[in-house]
Length: 70
Image (cartoon, rainbow, N blue to C red):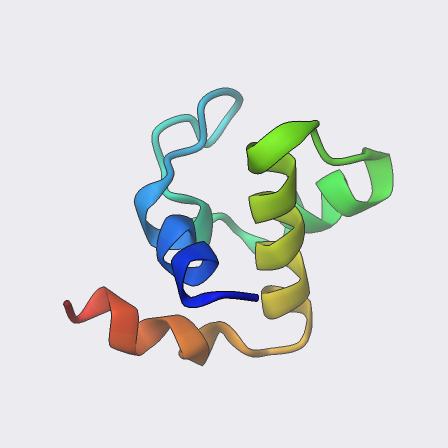
């Protein structure tokens, strides 16, 4: 987990689906957990979704708050 990856969670919008346009950091836990069960998409998007799911699952979403304030 790099600072750049954390910032990308706040800057990258979901490109498809029910939450299209919402930044990855704001996706609901149940949606992230669905990807964890069904499989993350390939590439950067999948890596970011997996990182956010891990952060959310472990209750570490507060790590992103200082970055939101920028």
